[in-house]
Image 1 (cartoon, rainbow, N blue to C red):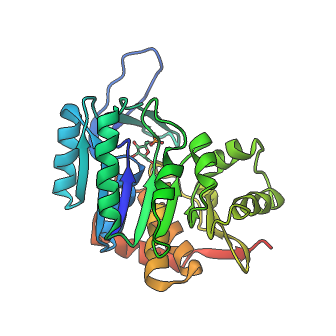
Image 2 (cartoon, protein in one colour):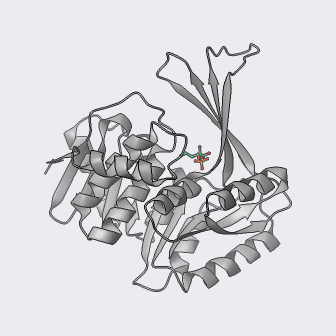
Length: 310
Ligand SMILES: O=P(O)(O)OC[C@@]1(O)O[C@H](CO)[C@@H](O)[C@@H]1O
């Protein structure tokens, strides 16, 4: 089973509008509501690939009830600790004829001590059956930045593949625990290094930096410009022709594609191709949940170009 930790899930609402103006009353002509949060997105894509997944984390309030209903509809197994607070919203705004996509992520509510204790109990129990653990997404307010480092430390079985997608100080702390796979995006990596990544040398520097923490497969997603991967043999850039679809949750599908590829083909090149194709296909849909989308991913996979940088 692939265990997915999403401690700050969300209900994602996408508004489609003919025009959006700040400080004005705006109207949408269509809305979509999907269960979200980075981990849940990874879970949905992996499930569509046919993998057995389980999501653990927190949920609360009426939004939490909807989140659970939506997960059930999609046959996603979950064990979420009920909290006094509520599950957050994340809002996406897509304007017709514009390439930009606006996102407003809610913060979520604070988790109390009792709720954390219940979570760690569930976490430890589920580690027994997990082959892969993916920890992904932002953390609730007032959560110590060492939280993901703590979880990684808790995974004592060396056979479990430890995967992390986090940002800022949470990522910084967790790197010290040498997860097997990390996947910051370009902006997150720039924040971590306090340096812009502009060219090939910067890319090499960034991957080497991650590898200095003994990360087996450091990945950096470059949005429309593809992705970077570091392996023992070298550093590579994978690309697909750019498209103008919605860039929300693409990094999560990217990560799911990579994990599926690595697990089933044990080949990082096949994995990075599946990752790029999964991210690309996600730009066309609010979520990846069915076999038809997976077919599209497999067709696209062979079009991904992988070039050695050094
Ligand atoms: O606040 P976070 O956890 O960084 O981001 C939350 C979020 O925007 O990320 C996903 C897309 O990657 C959405 O499903 C979700 O709502």
